[in-house]
Amino acid sequence: MVWRNFTTAHKQTILGPLWFIIQPLATTVVFTIVFGQIARIGTDGIPPFVFYMSGMVLWNYFAGCLNGASSSLVASAGLFQKVYFPRLIVPISLLFNQMMYFLINFAVFVTFYLYYLFFLETSIQPSLWILALPALVLQAAIVGMGVGLWLSALTVKYRDIGFLLPFLTQLWMYATPIIYPASYVPEKFRMLYYLNPMASVVEFNRFAFFGVGTLTKGTFLFGIGSGLLILITGLLMFNRAQRTFVDIV
Image 1 (cartoon, rainbow, N blue to C red):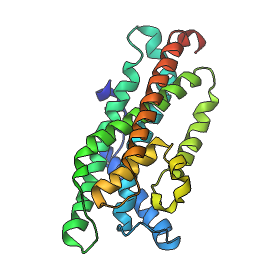
Image 2: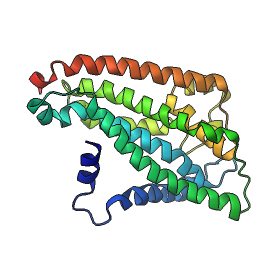
Image 3: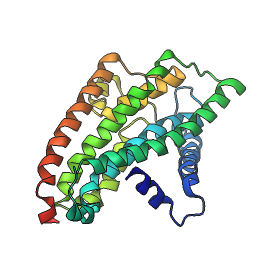
Image 4: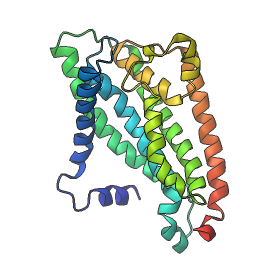
């Protein structure tokens, strides 16, 4: 199923997987011009190009997991009606598809990061927390999958969710320190701000690669706990919906 999803996504395209390099690069350029040059939003001393790219690389993976899982039941209804197999396989397969795209995006980010680190005079100071990157990727997958399973269960009955999802995802992105550093959030509101589990993921990633950030161990552990809670409740909702959704669809 992973291979089927991958080949279907690139069928009848000229550039194929190159789109997964072009899209994040184009987004980063736009963010650099609009938010870095025109709006002049600070980046805590990090070069704007790699600042935005470091936020988008994990956000894109999360958003891909979220979008894939949220439509997994409805999009595969025809397949489910023909043969029985564990329904959870579909969102899990989409998770691995998004991992392939993440590795491509991450390779692009690392290329530019190393260029800024070794060939330009910057204040970049990587830390040993880079070794925790697999845990950050897992956290993004857990949150994306958990929320996606919630929405997948709701979409069976309420198709409006499919129309609301792009808007909600966009709002969530602005509530995450991607186009601005978390240091812009007043300190008295930061605990509330870190209720967003993706905020700690993005901020920890920046701290690992650039040595700059406002994240504490407590807020990061809280993000992990909230992510696991989202995943567990999402699995329960998904399991309840998948029992009867074929009759509803």
